[in-house]
Amino acid sequence: MCLGLLKRATTIIVPPPVKPIPESETIEMTRQGFLNTMKTFGIEPISLATPLDSIVRLASKTELDRIAPYLVYPAEWYAETLWDCEDYGLQAQLDAGRKFEVTVRLGLGQMELGYHGFAITLDRDLNLWLLESNSGFPWAGRWFSKGEHSYLPDKVFI
Image (tube, rainbow, N blue to C red; front, side, top):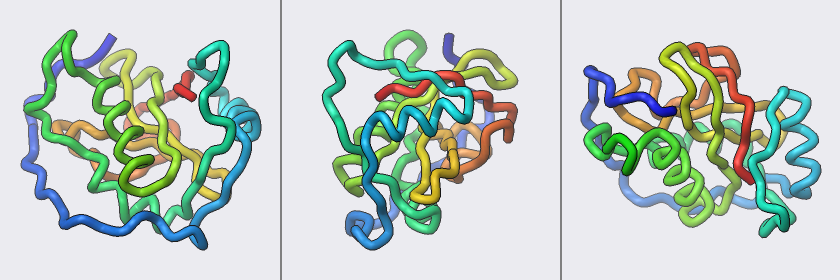
């Protein structure tokens, strides 16, 4: 399902700690509202029968850009079948919530090299954004739109 480590691994410089995203730069919406918006992009939920979170917190694009470098991890962490693409996406999901108090989720979908896991979110204007969290990809650490770098998400974990 996931890609092997790309040959062009880059070194990650870990930025100093930062504050969570200010509340003035976020909106809150219901889980169902989040899912309804994702559905407009053709993305279906990967979900539990009983959802755990009923509210999501979405940040401005400016704030998403600020936190993006903190949601990228060393390519060397890749271990096929043990810690691979969806684990990078899940780590970004966990760190976004814990460190920045904002909703970013694991997304799954097609890309040039096959089915793949990555980070996905909506900004507070309900624009869809994707993020590659494996530094082995040249576009890692910068939010991009559906279709860029051939990413076509079809699932979101929420």
